[in-house]
Image (cartoon, rainbow, N blue to C red; front, side, top):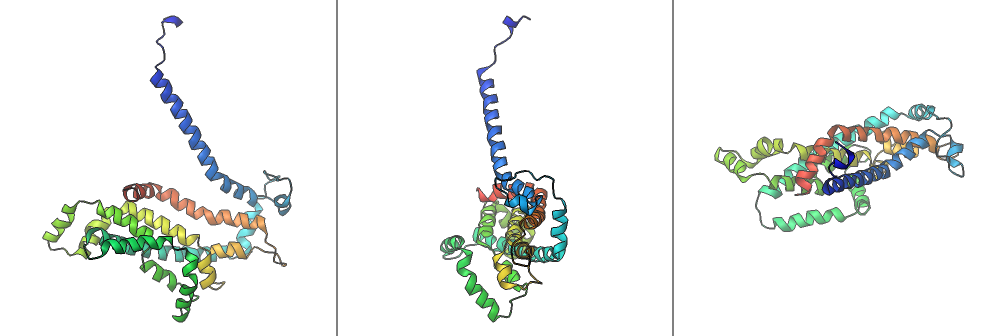
Length: 287
């Protein structure tokens, strides 16, 4: 077959290839935009203090100061603070996921006067900044003798979270009514319906809610700084407060190295649970 006899390229196929190329270019650019700050953080953790303070900026360390990560680990009780963060985040994420699922089930499947108005108030509470409730919350816990304990996170977990309640409510509202009616005919109450039927069906939302709640608590700086002493405090507070010189000047390269190790568990959790996280957000948050 000669060159003149080759079939011409389909214009539709050419447009599809161009569209894919544009799409992949945009996705790569967006990925680079999101990974850029983390990359800068890693590079900062591999520099000397002089390189961080240099002008113009030294983008690439020469040479890489890998010992910064070991120094940041040994300078403080890194594992102890990480354990505190893990305990608080796990307790809160577990309790708030279950309590939010229960409240979302009530809004989705039960009927009561004023339910819509109450749900609107719940959604409106998401617009309240944390700083507004910080001082009253501290005074309440101080009166109850719960300062310098982990009880505040237990109570917060049992109180549910408005955004997670919204996710569960949207998911439970989409389940078939026949499941509930068949269980009632068999003699199940609403508590049994929730635990035996609805909760096992909601694993995507459970996964997404746990990851979100865990990330909230792991990354929280204000509440642990306000409510906990130094020994009981979390890794977020330790990273921001403990890497200083005798004159009180922050050691920024060690802070950056510690921050990389501080962020790593969250990235690992998301990579493990990303399928359930995406499924939960798509099946409930977008309904």
